[in-house]
Length: 617
Image (cartoon, rainbow, N blue to C red; front, side, top):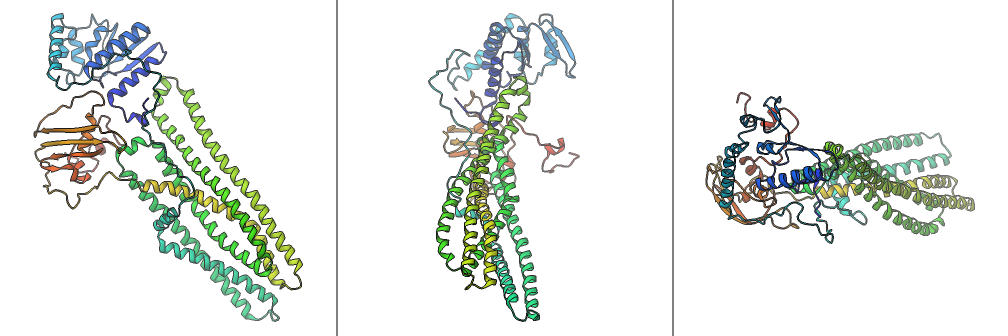
């Protein structure tokens, strides 16, 4: 089995038409509407589909009513009723094909797309039909040098039940394991500006020192004999004003640093995705890309700065509180060793689970975005085949998977919250008992500060651990965006220094020489163009003929370097396009793909997106 890419990108036009037709044959509807499924296939396959699928299977075997919309008018004589539409959309004729005037269909079908010899056979004499068949046979014999394997009849081959190996086309989303590497923090700090990050951290330290100085000054003021001495109020006012200024600058600078880092990460990731090869978008569903640029970047913009701010502030305040408590009650420092061991053990278990659950939650969110985009595009097909219930069940399954990961992450936070509350209660109880036991030798002011910090530590310590774990889980979003920022590009946009010299009017003649061309779409895929060698003279009109999947589109992609050329050369007017910048190359070649893309806007902007032609022209 072969996995299809999003919107069937790994299928040719003919394969899409046949797949849609096969899906229609499996549907158990009484009426089958076929919107020109024959135009995307070659004449041989077209006749085979019409005779064996439409006439043989749908009409004769399944006894279904078939309404076929097509401009291949020679099939009209096989219909029971014919509806001919005029150029303005009105009905030109409706009735039996036998009674339809010969010239009517010829007048109202697109004569530019049909060969004149083919049109003469529509409702023509038997002799003319034989002449047309003879001409077609001769044409096929003339191109017999390009032999391909003969296509089997529809329904002739049976699918072996032994082979169920799925050929993967959509790449599985990469999921990192283990703790977030320090390189992720380093890269994020570099994007934010490493010198400014250091200054911001220094301001956090100064702010905490200011808090300690203020509280110890209050202790000395309360214990002073002459409390009315103006020096106390003056120093206290100076410390308070300085602390307010430092805290304000610290907060503004810190959030500015995070905003700068998130903006640079977005720009770098966006440009890396924008410069990625076309195959990247074919093998990565749009929902996955939207998930990273919406959900992950949203958390980096909104949640990560708040969490990192709390971690830095609580880390310094908890460290200061612990030092003050140990200075006030020295024997409590002996208890700190087992408490730290227990704390690190709990934190390690929590981080391991919480980090992986957060990654799992982010990955399970991608199918939800992918379902939104794909199902909105295919609403007509979904309703036509009554697939609403199946797709609702699929979406519910994806939603359940995401909900399970999110609830597990939430329960993990409740688990550590209870254990840290018990640990903080132990520290508070030990500090209170120590203060009572040593009330004769301890300074009352210092004991008050120690108990105050112990109470503050009991609440802040739990919040610190939870926020530090949350910061690491939020850094997985940075980690995922850094993967996009490091995507390989498809090549230099501008001409490299060793690029061949050519005139501004290049290409002037349009002579194309291909020698030993080998190309593939990515390194782990087989080569699709194998040693092509040919020369196209200037001003030549060339038709590329081949069966489905033979590499017709791949050859055109190679001319524009949309796929990976691994060997050979493509020379246009003496210049090897493999050594030319992509901007130059693609601006010099016009190409109409099988599925042209129109952008939202006016017809004028689609015809001239760069506004290079005046309106009068």
